[in-house]
Length: 457
Image 1: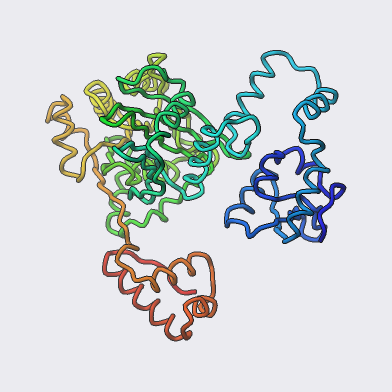
Image 2: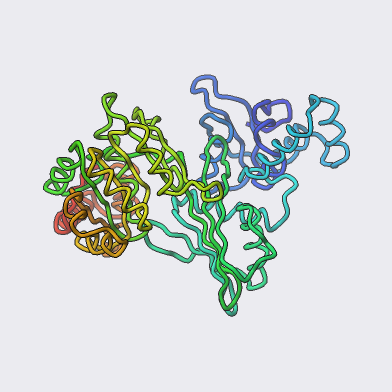
């Protein structure tokens, strides 16, 4: 199908910027009436995520078709009009509705936070947007910008493991960190003190919260960005993968009418996900569930849980302690506190557990027994800990793939993607029976480490 300006849909022009279309050589060539998908012509072999990104931006599935690159470029120029900035501005102004100053500021701010929008953005801004976008497509939980003596490392935390994905020149450290600080509304002139900030970016209709932290080091400021994607689906409690004995014991404690339940583990171990899944399991119309979090990572209402969720705001004086104190005046049955960090929060949580409330929270310890000593270190009397603490669950992330061979990883990835055994055998250039033997080895490996996985294709 030959691209042409008159075949480009109006929706494509409105939602995909000219810069993005030219940079990736993509243009709409109409819609498939049978499937309802947008047909998008591509001029070069596209990256695996391009179709998904276009679908998110357009709000509907797309089907990529190959076409002549020169024809695509001509179609883009014809559909979007002249590239001259003055002509484009005058043309847009003649058709645009009248906006007040506040609306203009809002639209500019939205465009600045859209990772897919590249119009009027400088090179450093585009680089930071590209890094965040890449991290999100790889399902990373954190982005680290770490300056060294001769280079700057960009590292993503994937499945709890920090991996280096980029090595950038030393000179880009300051511009990248300054851009990240601007996003977090932090003082870019202050480079001697640690700072914290937060922001929200968009990819189409997806909203991603960013928690930003910077700290001065020997070779410049280091920045870490925590990514909290609201599009992540909250898994069912049964899908957490707990051994049956742990699953039953923890759920039995979580259905109590009062007590203090703690989930412990290192950073990135999924403690908050466990608490959310627990609330989803025990939530009902008969109980009043309230939370105080930093920040709200999942919206429980989207999975049918009637919960009132609050977020801390230290600048306004809303901390875990103050938020919890006010929540207890709202007649709650179940209270979730994002994290026990200080004496006051720990003391109020223990008192709430002793006065007829079920309190769920997280604590930074490496194992379950250490939670008791940690609460005592925070200033809670030992007799109150013994009277209130109902259960402590320790968890960690295991890299079950690291010990696998290259062929076993291919089989795992293929089965996870829903591929048939015959197709996997074709990729490995081996027989069907060889793939079956690999699946049997994988099953034995996962059972040996306490996991029960369905590996049949």
